[in-house]
Length: 65
Image (cartoon, rainbow, N blue to C red):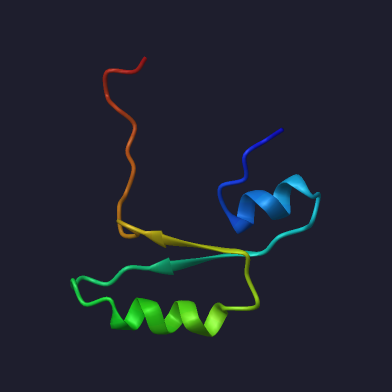
């Protein structure tokens, strides 16, 4: 028997199609804005990802041939 740790895991294991959302974290420690955005998505998505560095720019390492 598989242990279910979240609503997302439960939905995926049941074969349901799930919707997820992504919220960008601001440049502040104040969580009010993020919480308000998440509340607006309640009932529409199964899970929310809050990004920790949305402005990052990945580059290839120059040592890779």
